[in-house]
Image (cartoon, rainbow, N blue to C red):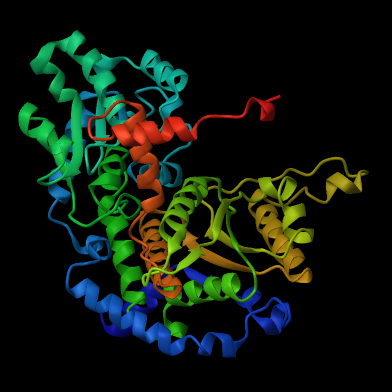
Length: 479
C-alpha cells in the first residue's frame, strides 16, 4: 500500500475531535479559549513532548508501548481458548484498574444481554462477570448463582496485596478446594500479576496456577491494553489484535510535538486551560452510545486518580485536578442537563458519538392527527439520537458552556483501542501540564494502610491505632 492510500485508510478509520465549542470565537471571550492562550503553551508542550519521548525511550512509560508488546498474545489466546472450551462462566476478581478496562471492553464490544443467552446462543463464549466490589450481599449472590464446577476465575492484582481481591480469592479458593480437592481446583484459576514479585507471584510459584504477566511499570489504570484487559477480552471473543492495532494507530497520530497535529496533546491543553484559567473544575464525559458507559467509568478513574494530587513535582501544595463525571446521552438530558445549562460555569463536557450504529431501527408512522407524536413516524432512532446530541450541543453553546466531541466512525475493537490510547496519552500529558506525577496515587495508599491496620495486618499496628482514634465520633452530630 502506498503512503497516500495508507493515509486515506487511516483517515477513514480514525477517531476525530471537534473542539469548536471550546474556542472563544464560538463561545465568547469570558469562557471560551483563545488562540493566544493555546499559543502560550506551545513551547511548554514541546518541552513536555521531548520529556515524554525521552522517558519512553528509557522505558519509564511502558504502557505507551503496550500496542507493540505482542509477546504474550499467543499465551493469552491459548489460555482464553482453554477457558472457552472448558467453562460456562468466567469471573474476574479485581478492582479499580484491574476491572474497569475489562468492563469497558465488555460493554463496548459484546451483546449487553450476553449473560442471559443460552449456551447455544452464546456460541461457546462463557458468561463473563466482574466481581469488582466486596459488598458481602452482592458477592455471595454471585457465588450462589454460579455453578462453580463450570466456572473459571481470573484473579488480577499486580502487587498481590489488594485487600479486596485477595479476600475474594481466599473465599473462592476455599470453595473450589471443597469441591475438587487441593490439586484439581487449580485448573479453575488464572492469576494475572507481576512477573517476579508480590504475594500473588509467590502463590503462583507455590501452587502452579496458570498465570499471565502485568508488565513492569504498568499501573492498574493504564493496564487495559495488557493481559489485565486482554485476557477477559479474548474470552469474550473480542479481537485483541484489533484492539492493539487501533491503539498503535492512535500512537502514530500522536507522535507530533505540534498541538495542532496531536489530538491527545491539544485536548489536554484545552482542558488544562479550561480548568486553570476558566474555572472549569469538572470534566464530564457523555457518550451517546449505551455501549460506551463502561468507557466513561474507566475514564473517570484514569482522570481522577492520575491528576488529583496535593503536591507538585517540586513539592508545593497545589491540590490539582478536575473532577470527572460520567453522564449518558440521551438518558441524562432528562436528569443532569438542566444543571449543565443553567448551573455554575464550572464544567467541560466531552461527548462521544459514533457515525454509524450497528443497528438501524425504524419508527413507524401513526396517530396522524396528533402532531406531538406523528412527526416521529418515518424516521429512525438513529436520526433521533443524533438530533438530540446536536440539540444538546447547541443548547450548551447558546449558554456558553464548553464542550467538545469525539467521533468514532463505528464502534469496534479497532476504534476502541484508539480511544483507550488517546485518553491515556491525554492524561499523562495533562499531568505534565499540572506539573504533578500522574502515575502515583499517594492518597489511595494512605487509605489502604488504614485498612491493613484495622484488619490486623502485622506491621500496621500504628495505623490501626490512628484509625481508631480518628474514627471517634461526637454523638451530638448523629441524629
